Image (cartoon, rainbow, N blue to C red; front, side):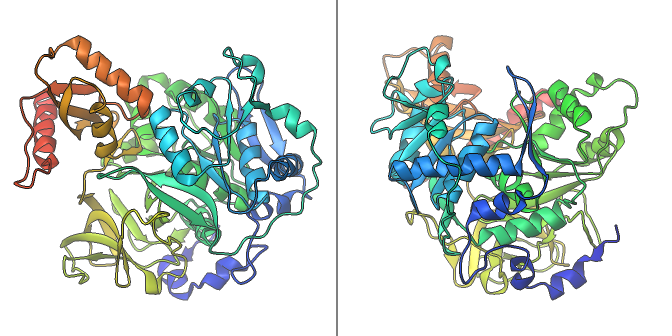
Length: 552
């Protein structure tokens, strides 16, 4: 396929070009289920390939999912759930999860993902904040809601596996079987939300991000030109739909273009990954850097010079290093491109697979995605020059596909004049491309997940022995970073291994199994500013020195 020149395409791009590819429009609105499912249902197209843990593998057509989504939308209507209402879902990567997403969107309601590793505290905060009307989960995850105060009604998948027997819960299969598959999709305005996300912060609780329907235009451009998704591709995004990259670009994105997506319910290991690549002849792969690093670290799993079907691969979350890029090219047989984005904005700066760029720099986030103007600013909000370091920002006046309206409950103001400030620090290459240099706050990226230290610190403080805590990322060759907690304990408590185990368990159960500190060090005090704020940069430097000493 002959690729278009990036600079020419970018210069000629208008929002109308992306809008023309959708059923709805910015003026009259959209039904997102129509855009990502129903429009393809009259063709013999597969929408989902599912690889399960306990049951057999299966594939599901757009027509099948359209009918099931209609049943789920009718169920929601019978419960009084409709336009603008939040419906939360905690399910593994199964066909039922996709039915819930589509049914919620068909009804004009707002889909709210809950990552399966969340603990009761993280769940309760999100449900309460969003005034969630309904929760969908399965027997394996049901117990996590027992400690949630004010939990909404629960629709239970696989009720027979619920050992506790929550008799008040409704049965997913039973309720859907009672409903008609006919449902008139509810059209929502371009600025009305269809997804309710939450993003980590360094101060206070997670912030709400309500994604409006107009984001579909941005999702389409990213999938087509950065991911380089083509009609003939077999596309697999490894990311979990409980998070933004998985929900935006493993569910909404590929279906928006009429391509099938792949769900692998098995946990990520080199063995399960290679099995998926082989069985489904994957040609287009997307994953976090952690996934590629783990595959490279277990290179011995691959015997000989095995050839895969991969044409391209993409990575998002943090920069790839030259070793990983070289390994992907050599062992997986395809180029891998770095992409940059946030929960708030979706992807905004990319090395585009299907646009010919003047240069692709190793470790660089690339150039502005069409429909966006990404810049870097100094503290005076002036755009910086080549070689200078500044904060990455989006020029909203020149970004017709920018869709972030601000945090749902006004938790923070990230806007300065015409700019949205990302909080990420970059180096300018002088040609409108940038490389990531760090955060201007304390967000920790561990195994591809972004964790706000404030959440972990406040959870540790729930333990009676903890007086203060400071949490930072410690460099780790496989995960990128691990969480390390520096903890000051109260008098009368012993700083021993038993207390460390208790603290780790507390964070796992209350917050998340991915956000617990893998290392805990007891200290007599924490470094602070004169106003009493923890100086995490001092702790970060200390953790880095420890990691460097281990690898020296």
